[in-house]
Length: 487
Image (cartoon, rainbow, N blue to C red; front, side, top):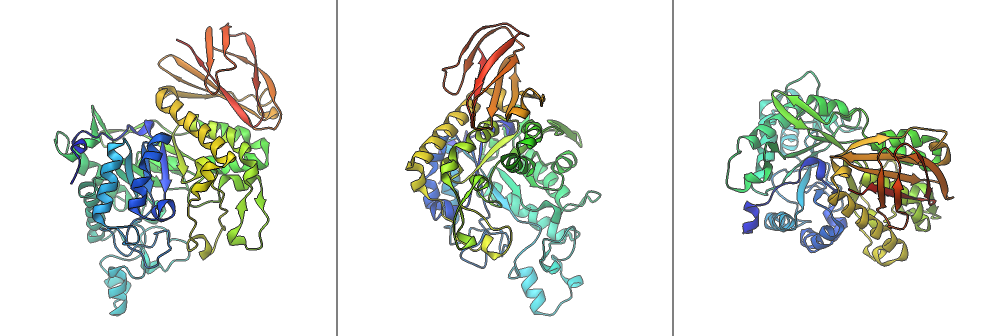
């Protein structure tokens, strides 16, 4: 059933990924619907999608983070053949697919919890469940998976192998890593991602579908850790090659309420403190982190600027008339260091607010409202996102280049301005962002002589710039400019 292209498909290099997170049911009802939207994602410029959990769960409306099974696809989404078709057709369009994997805890209906509990066995007698690392929220500790058991370790490695081999997924986003990572233990998360890497690496030289992971010396298996307490640490000490991190999201939301936080946001756009490459047991691994303003766990970013009055907190929404205030954040996100991630519908201003706690977070169906795409706000935002993604995909300084944040509070941040550059193989781009409402004129000393092309609209090109001399730059309010040295 696999297209012949599958034997030629290569996973994007980790630093070149533009990621899109989606929940199949909310994005397009089911897997077939998601397949029908692949052309849209490819046109947007996305080259990797992250699917929220697909495995069996108890409820029809559920985020999927309390799994019952691990080897199949829940029938609310479709079946195994549908999933294979989705990945096959995604690969044909140049889109990698990673799946959200929930290994730290299970549902009370998971067989190794349910059967042993019903038969009255003690937790010590359960070969699979039990305390290992951190307990998830207020969940029954008996629902934790115990990676001290060899059976548990072998089970989840087999799950990974099954999804890599049978479904041809390109990697995993590992949910709630604190639940099964102990820094001083070789078991749990440490062993799982190392063994998964080695399982793939052993296929090097293969002429079948495993060849998708290998490009020159790189092993392009995507292993993304959700370890929010310290993402730099999990990257340094495990075989994860990328990580979720909420610090950029938090700093962006704080900046929206207090411009004094611009300095922190500027540093985070450059992933200060993250090592780009680490050797682990003789294996050289590229490392990076995700950059996002939204994900499934948080209210839409537009909610930060204002909400529409509503009596029911569960139905509260962001005020889309403030769409323009999102622009400098999107420009920064899609030119920043790291892997930029969009959450379904973000590109045209989806505006659901999400409660901070309670079952209303998980059990309320929030379908993507595709009609927003056709509104004036939606068209303006999606046109900007398309332009930025194209710019990033076609110019390696934005995906692979060095990042330099011009941290001058008096000159820039005090005036709601952020300035940073991206440089790669002699190609220099300056990103200038204005988070305030008023146009600003600021001075900047470019490091190279020459002509600079303005990338967003091409109407503010700079001719004959002399290195080290002040140039006056006009930066429109709630927007930005990007200047690239012409070579």
